[in-house]
Length: 114
Image 1 (cartoon, rainbow, N blue to C red):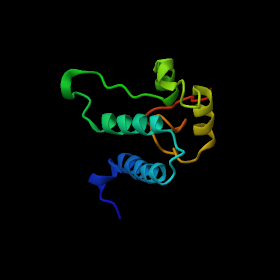
Image 2: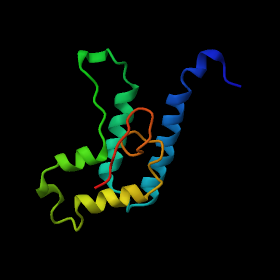
Image 3: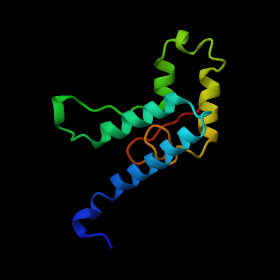
Image 4: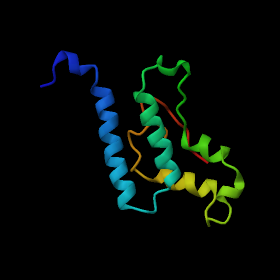
């Protein structure tokens, strides 16, 4: 049973547990795009920082936003393209519950369709 004081943290705990499972899955399956992992990690860290810390506005990112902001020369020659990466991530259930990957996550809803 969860105490009343701890109930307010249940959504954050669920996010952390989802990220933990996601990180395990990423490191067990090297076909998962690393870009997604860095977006997820950034969003998890950013969302855990107090809103008024540092005097700067926090920004969470969607995978699509990050992929389309990368210079093409970082992607060219890798054998994949942005659309393929987004299609693969949308077909995966690995990112469920992760801000920036899950289209229905409580902190950030993302349309990561190509």
